[in-house]
Amino acid sequence: MLITVSGPPGSGKSTNAAGLADRLGVDHVSGGDIFREMAAERGMTPVEFNEFAEQDPQFDRKLDRRLRDIATTRNDLVLESRLAGWLAADHADFRFWFDAPLSVRAERIAEREGKPVDRARTETKRREDSERKRYGEFYGIDIDDLSIYDAAYNTARWSPEPFLDILVATIEAYDPATDEGKAPIEGVSYDF
Image 1: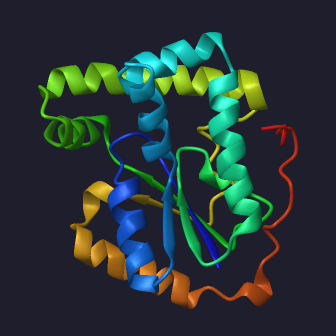
Image 2 (image 1 turned 90 degrees about the vertical axis):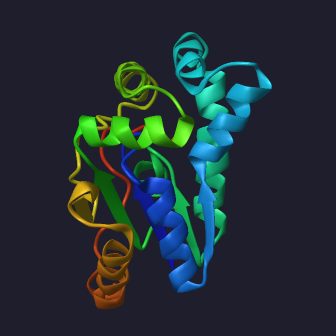
């Protein structure tokens, strides 16, 4: 089973995707980890690398091709990235979207990265604006269109353990025989 987890920075993608993979006994691949590695290789923060990538699409396309290859060649996996649901739209068995209010996400990011909340909020907003622009220009994706997802959650409403229980219950209740969602999405370029 291929499960995707998507959402904006600080939404709990990584924490919950790793927990879900662990609970289900499958692998977890994080697009965010790969992206941060690419930024660090160039001596940039993720925000700086996002803005740099606006000028040169080769970096987004390299990451997205890698994630798309993973999505199309592997099973028994939780694939987590901002675009995972789109990249694996025609292969994923289940697509989750996680979100939380910007104030909550900024607090999470500030704690994780050891920076002031105001700075985390400003950087997160810049990053989201940059990503929204790139995804629209490069692939024709409206990142705010949640219609491709099977379930969307506000992660600020639950603590981690009960939320993982909800995710596992959602997957266990899933009936693949009723799945009609594995089809290319109109208007999206799959030339990643």
